[in-house]
Structure formats: C-alpha cells, structure tokens
Amino acid sequence: MLLYCRIYNPFPIFYRTDRAHKKRDVFVFFSGRAVDKKVIYSFPSTGVIWQDRQHRELFKRVELFVDAVEKDRGKEELLRLLEFLDEYVVFHFHDEEKAMEKAGFPDSLSHIQEHTGFIDELSELRMELSKGYSHEIVDRIKTRIIRWLKEHIGRADRELGSFLLQKDKGSIIR
Picture (tube, rainbow, N blue to C red):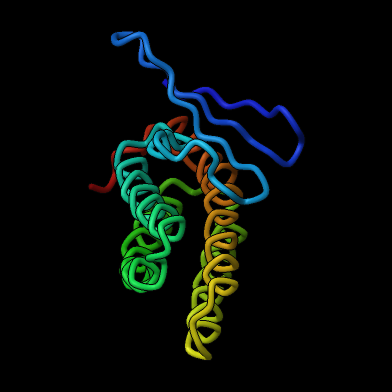
C-alpha cells in the first residue's frame, strides 16, 4: 500500500507500508536528490499493475545511476541509463497512450505533451553530454531525470492510473 503526503510544498515524501511484514519504506526527494536511496523502489504507485511494473524498473535504473554518480562512476551508468530510457519511452509511453485512448482519458492531450517534452529533454541531455563529460553535466542530468519522476509519475501518471481504475480499464494491456 502506498500513501502520499507532503511535508514542505515542493518536497514530496512517498511512504509504502507492508502490513504483512510490518515495515515502512520511505522515498524522499529534496532539491531533486534522492535522500534515502535504499528504498528508491518505493515509488508513487498508480494502482495499475502494468504501469507500476514499468515504473518500478525505471526507478531501479535511476537508483543504479544515482549510486554510480555518488561513487564517481556516473559516466558509464549514465550511458546505460540513457540507452534504457531511449527504449523505455517508446514502449512505456505507447502503452500509456494506448490505455488513455481506450479508456477515453479526458486529459490525454496534456499527458501526451508531457511525454513529448520528456523525449525532447532526453535529446537535449544527449546533446549536452556530447559536448563533453563533466560532473556538473551528470549532476544536471540526474536532477532533471529525478524531477521528471517526481513531477510526471507522482502527478500525471497517478491521475491516469486513478482514471483507468475507475473506468475498470487498468488491465487492458499487458
């Protein structure tokens, strides 16, 4: 079960409690930085199984990248993450857009524009990286990707998930 709350306006905290094991995971963003990395798998659940499964994989990849940056191995892991994201945006965005269309999601245009914006942002990040590797570039990329997770998945995808579940279309694909 995932609960969502805010302690400071721009800084969300995500809690996931597992009643069977009586434990609570916390995933916190402060200034675009994951503070408690060991629980990065606690992500803002949408309640839609296929969507949450895809998001979970994304969070795992971002965690590997954040860990690598902190251990000064950011360049190699960044290239792996960008490669993964190139594939991820194709299948994940397609799946979400297909679900929106089938369910008649009223905010689909705005949601698709966010997807397009992220694809454009990935292109910009690649161009930035092609000019040369530096710790500053890696930190900027890390901040932008984490911001995307926070803003898009934490808001837009949760709204979509809620709509899909209400329409009972949450299992229409995968």
